[in-house]
Image (cartoon, rainbow, N blue to C red; front, side):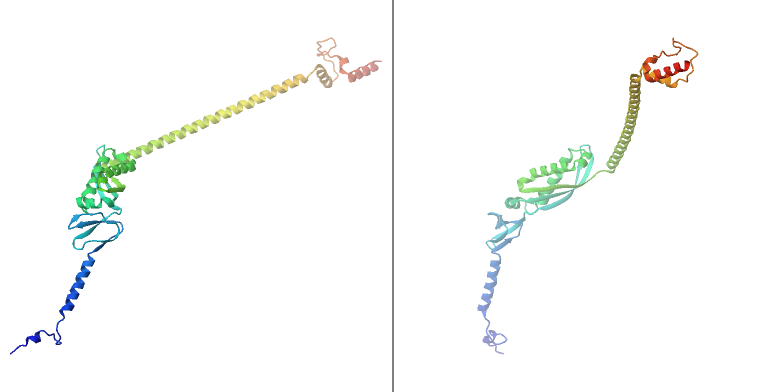
Length: 306
């Protein structure tokens, strides 16, 4: 059976294959692929590190759209946003108490140091640099405080650790935003000792308070007695002074005439059986000095005798 070669160059519809159209399609796809690799977009809060054939070169790229050499350059994004690193930590206090704590570190990477960080450490710098530095600084700071001081001076301890971390990590462009000690956990024996001490201090404070209250009550009672005694003494003195003033006034108001007048007013007309003076009275009275009423009485008695 004979086969016509011209039939093989035809498709099922008896039309020739268009190789020129396929070439244009391949060229278009290649162009799109190259164009897609000719630019990059750096997200917000990131820095783009340019790698030329795997080597860090050029200035870091800021946020936004940037052109690059396709297939020769690529861009790695390094975050400059604040990140949180949380981890448990174990240390020993100055009084040899084991201290377990949970800590949280807020940190960020400066954009200027991003290329160098990628070159020397890479993107996993949290585990390579931050984690061991946090543990070492925490142990160093804890060793300067007693277990009780770690509780009462927690903020001071946090500031000490933060300062130490800053000095160790700043050369890598890592800035410590904040360092927090979430909690401290001590041994059961230490917790019982702290509780017993607090109970003893509370009892002592209660005893001192009650003693002070008793002293205040006693002082108040004594002061009240002194005030009452002073008031009573003042009242007696005032009464005595008033009586003395009254006696003085009465003494000054008395005279021989007043006394004689009072005697006459009270005389019942009977002569005393016992006399101590020439006129037969207990008191020597000058009748001429008594005034008109006395003279009238004398005149009347004379008339009766006549």
